[in-house]
Image (cartoon, rainbow, N blue to C red; front, side, top):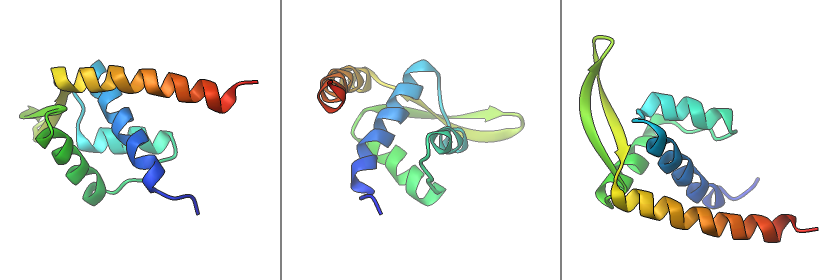
Length: 100
């Protein structure tokens, strides 16, 4: 079994990427991550989102949607900076991993 520790950073990058495109909420990001092969439970995802919010990468608000309250997460300016920095590092790593 592949060490799940490696995927933790990938999941955070997915979250920042999608939050940079539009506000996201828990169930949506669970489904989106599942499309990429990551199986997260709410008990795993929500502490991750809360931690990213505590560190200042995300900001959440409670909003009503289709008659239910949802916590929507948006990327913050420090989150944008972190995402852009990570993109450069991923580009460099990708080049090394797949250079021919």
